[in-house]
Length: 253
Length: 274
Image 1 (tube, rainbow over the protein chains, first blue to last red):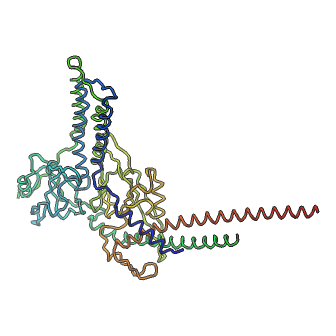
Image 2 (cartoon, rainbow over the protein chains, first blue to last red; image 1 turned 60 degrees about the horizontal axis):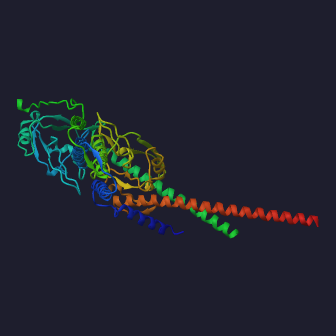
Image 3 (cartoon, each protein chain N blue to C red; image 1 turned 90 degrees about the vertical axis):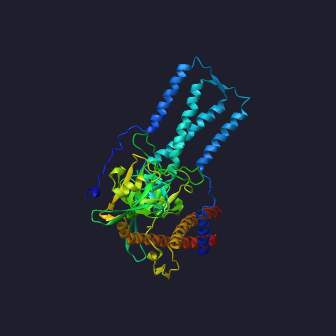
């Protein structure tokens, strides 16, 4: 039994499965929508002369057409935003055009101790989805104002490591208030999600907590790695024993 | 001095209890039904092909169902990871699996893994949408899961695999999960075993399998680990096959022995009669 050959064969199969070669790049919603509409219209055309038309009150027809259509448009709008969630915090998740903190405008504010704090100002709402119609409109859901050090880029999404407070622009320090009011996407009475207090896990910041767990996670990883290798060695021994039994039995025959 | 005092105004964002979507649908339906009732005798009815009627009513309704599902998901809590991945979740039916392991240095390590069903959702003032596990499962080291008091942050980049590439004990636990349905080769498993903080140098190990390790990057080591699991799955199948062959050969041999013994007994009986 050539174990190395078997190992290579399975590694090759595994690599092929992981590559995602067979994935279709078109958004699945587009396929569903156009597929179902196409089939229904095709059936309507094909059965135009065979099936008798039905009689219906025009207002009832309007109810059946426009109401689902309005709801559909609204839900599509919400779904696009869902597929485009960019910012996550303790309780909230927001769609936003920004995917990187570096792109967001920054305003420096002095705190009570005259320390300078950089606040990132991110308009919330709006979305751009791959293989789909772009939906803009940033700022419709308010603004996220967060200490830059309390936000982390996760590669496509932003994680706000702060307890967010929902407030209004009037409650912010003067520099921030002026900056937001002059923002091109600002609208009066907009919500402000303000984050300046660090989220703590067991008395530690999230970064400190992760640093503390790092070595333990690596230890767990190697333990599992060893367990699999030891299990394979055990299985190889069992296979050899079984092989020899089979050979012995065949010879006996 | 007054400029520096921050007045925090916290508006009650829960004061509007009814979902605007329900209001919109309800008001629109009511208006059109009233119009239909008031005018059904004055305005003549229209004729329409039934399939066309289906296409303009049933199809949008189906789509509404799909998008409502997405809407509910968008409003429920999320589990998110580095790399831009996120899923809605109910955080119900979460399974904790303890793996007691003795490693090569004969040290015992207890590793805790969580099996979290992905998908489903529930929002306030709205019909609940269950269905956890429809978007697959997340299998993650418990140390990497941070509950933020709503959303859940998993501090490691997930690898999308199938249940067959899981550690044998985890595989059994996932497959016996009550929300696990469908083809095991198609249900996506998002496996998180290492923190996003892990660098290549952190995983350095002088000896792997009593040989100097040639694996240098996190990706290579992970790939090797996952291929080892694949290999163990293959070996399990091979051992099972060999055992079945062994059993079949043993049975055949025993049958022959029995037949031979019976023949010998018959011959002996005949000889005795003679």
